[in-house]
Amino acid sequence: MLTATSFSQLFLLSFWSILMRSCSSEATVQPPQTTELVLYSQDIFAGPNANDVPVVGIPGKAWSFTQFGTVFAADEPMTKTPDPSSAIIGRAQGMYLISALDGSSVEAVFSIVFSNQAYNGSTLEIQGTGKTLAKVVEYAVVGGTGKFRFARGYATLETIPVNATHAVNQFNVTVRHD
Image (cartoon, rainbow, N blue to C red; front, side, top):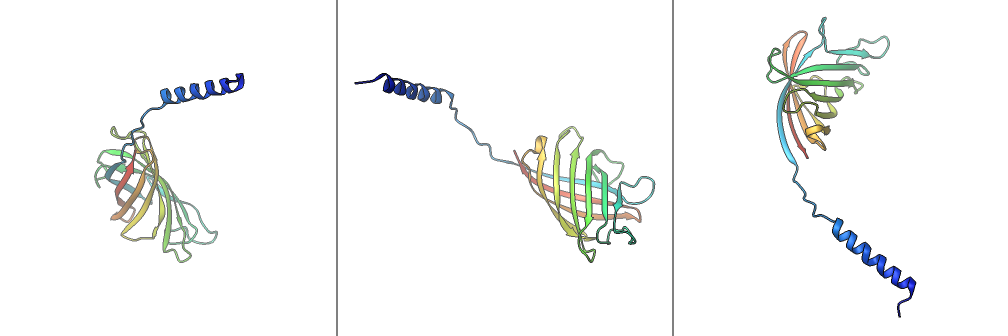
């Protein structure tokens, strides 16, 4: 015999079952997209238009790209080609720290902030340690926003010297993202 308590428990269980069945939907899992980009940063490290400058270092020591403890701030235009007058597609903004006592390693943490039509407002977050003054270094892509939400991947940077105050960094970026 059903008591009032067992009837209400049965009713609640039935109601909950119907509610859950009507609210459930079949989730579709989309495979991540892979995007490969080639970008160029215009690195100007001296003169009135410098965009990669030392901001702090060890007192009494030269603030240089091979001196342990030197921190650089960067806000470099990212262009479509190595030519500095080519279309700007975003900016590389962040900082670099000379992290090895002998000056042989640099820790980089920066964002690529896109302003071009295809990725406007999206970012890629890049970080890692590389050999100072190496021709090619590899960093991890640890995140992103906008079209690069949940990004993960890697970026290689190859330095192309232009003159005593200007270098171009070719970024080859491969990312998986939603």
